Image (tube, rainbow, N blue to C red):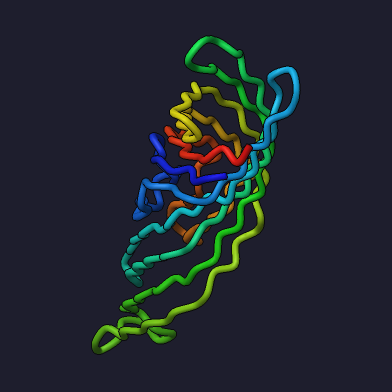
Length: 195
């Protein structure tokens, strides 16, 4: 039992319509269960702080949006360890659902109304919660496990391909944006062997 943490090496937004405002770190609890013949199962709950910013304007209006959200990934991994003296290289494959919940704050400046140019711009601000669809991820990775007494250190690289762009949006007359579907993480697992 222990924790897993690290950072994402890839951008989490795709397209030209948004800029990432996410934190690159990831952290959460982990349980690694050893099985016979070098096999094992690992289950994690990985937290990330997500966000993006968008801005677009034309002759009729200007818009700016800023989202902040909490992302939880729940990887379920099958592992195979090669038992070498002093350390154990391992491979892992698995599946992870991802849930993202947050809120987006938007500012809109309107220059034209139904009857043409407004005498002065109209400013409006609104905030709404975001409840993005659950994403499904396929994971592949590998690393090395070291043991120091009951302490276990497991540096690893993990690649995830998501089934859909969980975060997405567009301007009717402007660019679209969405979260990237490919993700690469560099992680360190720190665990304590129970028995």
